[in-house]
Image (cartoon, rainbow, N blue to C red; front, top):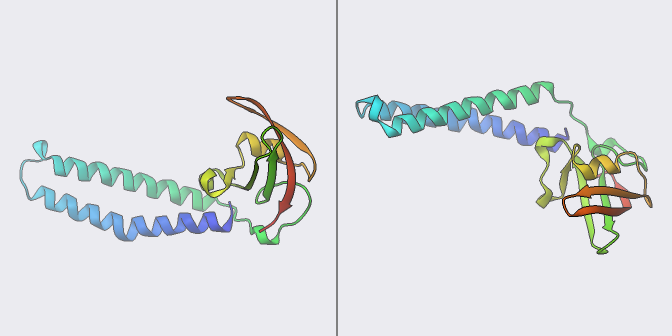
Length: 152
């Protein structure tokens, strides 16, 4: 994963442990004071929220423990690989796009970050500027020409 992706996970983990977990514990405690737990919707909602928070904490801790952080600014080369920011043009519509290839949990197409496991990324890996890649999409096969490979 990229350093930015690691930082995002670390920030979420800290927030869950320092803010969310204590808040849900307080909500459970308050709901217990309302009496009969079998018919207490607030208690059940708080326990469900606690389960989600604990599950998310475990998931993030696992990802962080197994993470390999790659500093993209220290990478270089002409070939597309993990961490590269690639500018492409759709050969049919002439529409240009710019994507950074990141880990699965970091992907956000609206922010220009696509997963390493996405069809477009897999097609571009190992290619260089000027090469055309074909990607099978629900609308048919799309062809993209690689315009630029950057390491930002």
